[in-house]
Image (cartoon, rainbow, N blue to C red; front, side):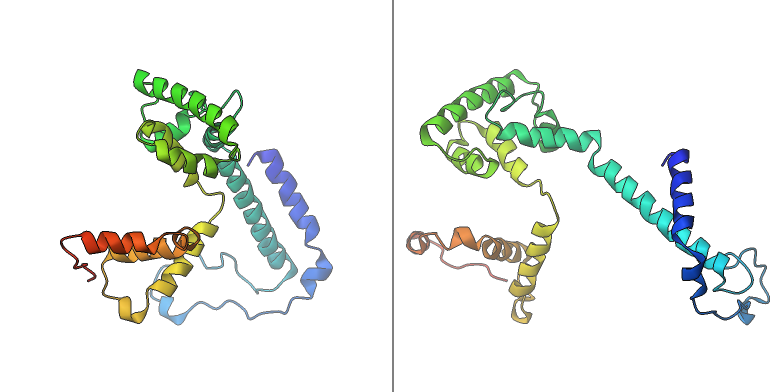
Length: 242
């Protein structure tokens, strides 16, 4: 935070804490040195002041400290969320489903490609991205699926062997969350799946059950008979549960 802004916030914080509001506070006891510290050299008290707690000046300092701390945290959070790196990541996500001049732009996809470990500067990737761009724009005009990231990724899944890098970027773009609601929802699912009778199951099976439960909108439309036929035709039918 700059000095001018800090000065302004400090003055504003003092103005907000009027004497009438502070004097209503209940007087508290006097700070007394603990007897256990009599044989030690104490250089500073906590809180770092002497006298009585609850005076107008001490409460003013407390409120100003809290107010300034909130402002500092807010400014720091804004600077982090709207940093150049995050803005470039947002531009990468926009380039995945814009269907305009920036659609699958190599320059805009660099940040996301770096996070995915994709060498987007290579000639092979350049060629694949350009081919995928033209193919997806043509198919979107023919099929007419929504110009959104999720429908495009679902459509590109059937062509992931032809465009592995393009599909990897699309699938990775879906994992970038705008909030923590997805993480919180997955933990809520875990509390329902991890019952006392399932405490000894292996981690991988537990993770698979959480994924199936969380994606219930997809799993309820699956054909169970296909899974039963595949299980029936397999040689080893024993499932390792624990």
